[in-house]
Length: 476
Image 1 (spheres, helix red, strand yellow):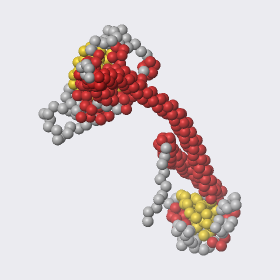
Image 2 (cartoon, rainbow, N blue to C red):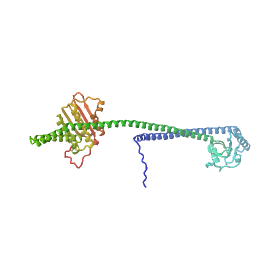
Image 3 (tube, helix red, strand yellow):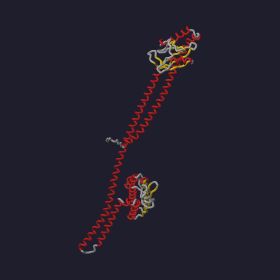
């Protein structure tokens, strides 16, 4: 089953705006991703640094607690023997009394894992806890005793908070009383550190989110500016295009009216008068035949001559409107016939040269170059007062060039006057349609006359026809 779905058709302005917007969106998106990655990486380094500093501060605090406690009863431990139970009891009482803050306390385990001191969790005292592990599987008591046997150190683990019985992250510092085989230490919960780190991460995410909002707002503003400027540019270009179209339409109408006026003048001044002469001659012959007097051959001969001249004039006008040689024989023969007719009509010496490069110009290029030559010869006839004209047509590796030069009085015109001249403007427009180039050189002083050079690019040359023998001469 076929569905007739609507096809999205974009205008030129919308396509232009889309082409401008897509790279902008991609660039802003890449910048946003890069900013996010860099910001998160930098913030994570800073957060890790903060976490490390806070934990190191906690560790120093714990070490100071244990050092101060040890200094408080070291005179007892230093003077007691390994089996002095009284000294052990005195030290245990001192440690049991050393509680601080809401959760802080000192603990003592012997090397066999029996808890000797734990003032916050008294139910653990005199029980063996070698098999005690936290929810992450850390053997807490075993690891603390191992650290104490090595001298001292820190252990990070989970431990039930005395206030609510829930496990929380804890850092413990432990040292040893080797003669008594005791592991003595204290710990501090670092949930405040983790809370601070989590708050810092949340703040980073909030900042990154705000940055995204800022980038999105800037992108939206830029897109609105792109679309707004595109619409303004489109409106301006459309107005200019409409104005140019009106001017072009007016020029087309002017050219049509000028061509119609020229044909009308030629028909009225030439053919019409010749046909009137033919009519008079035929009337004169008819009257002589009716009266049976005089010679009717002379007016008939004159009428036939005038009719032949009229036929030739009709052919000339037809050839000017659309030369048959251009379609049948090519540009070279058509230009040759044009200059021969110009020389016969004006008496100006014309030299025509062409380099045979076969009938390889496309139709548009042929018509454009022929009309340029026709317009140039018309200007020479009307304004140049020239006695010699040279026309050269040749192909080359860049395309084809038509060059027309005369020895007339030249042209002294400004760019504005050139733009207002219908003939020169028509030449320029024909060349522009072919992406070619038109050059007009004139001193305006009669020294070198005028040179008109029209070039069409190589794209308007057709590839050689393999069916045509290469040795057979052909025209452009």
